[in-house]
Length: 227
Image (cartoon, rainbow, N blue to C red; front, side):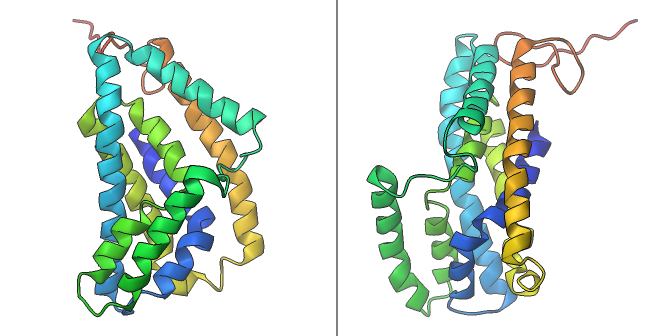
């Protein structure tokens, strides 16, 4: 399942260009080092988010509910994709999400004008807090990993998956037209549905290698070898 984190990040980066693209282009500097620090900041935030949801997942594992958590998370993802208006994991621009967006935006303003060498890193860290349905979709999957380390690793891979497009935004902007981005965005829910189904199968403990390996109640995979 860890492979899905990188692909989710990569596909999701096409979706997030609209929100994060202007921030990348407004970085206080245009060299490679600035982009590295910015993307490192975002990945740090995603990884820390993974630690937080990993604590929840680890709690489920400790009481032997890891398989049910995986099934529940996968089912909830499918419900969101199939039966709600957030078909592309877009979030409502009101309430708590609106307040969070405004607070992050207010924090980004001074940093975008800063001459500090650490400004791009801090911008990336704050940028990672911007409300984004795809980030929350990745967190859904991460919580089902069953442990702090694996959940953090999942979200770190998600962050790394977003880097190629965000790093080469200026290069790809001519190729990734709004029409192309729209087509790619339409593919995202289908990929998320595949991830959701895999989470459900993983929790069903069917003994299928890679897809639904045998696990005990804590989510630990068991391999049986014939002698």
